[in-house]
Amino acid sequence: MLTELTDEGLPPELTQAQPLWESVRGPDRSGAVRVSRLYANGDLYAWSDQRRVEGPGGVPRREAAPARWRLDARLSAAAVAEVEAVIKARFMGLTLPAPTVVVSDGTPAAARACVGGVGHAVSAPSAITAEEVRAVEHTIQRGVKPGSAPINNGP
Image 1 (cartoon, rainbow, N blue to C red):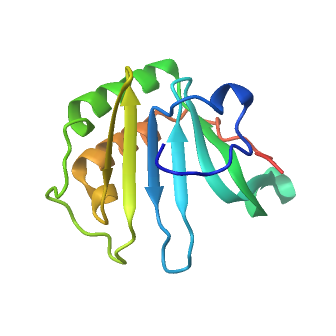
Image 2: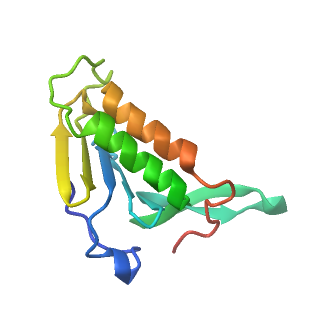
């Protein structure tokens, strides 16, 4: 894995699991680090110091909370298979420097995938903007099941 974060918030079955996809952005100018991990079971976790709660009228909102892994969304098995296909076709051969746009604030970034026991990682200020990385991230977002973002996602 790209990051050495605690397992706090992950279910026991994922604490030793290799993420299918992991992306890291930061620290940015404010010191914030954004990390997300997609697991083969379709669970998308984010390292976050905010949790979603139900606000007035049932409207979801975010509030400050201790940093931990929080279930952010779920993908269907078909969506996970599509993410794997995009990783294999687009990301696994990526080497940097690639023809990319540099992140405007120079924030370091990294991405890592592990499909079928084969891992590949890239790390550079421009990694997260590489077309190949964006393709994987877009496929993940497109595959999120409607309504799968849990409310009250952790203490």
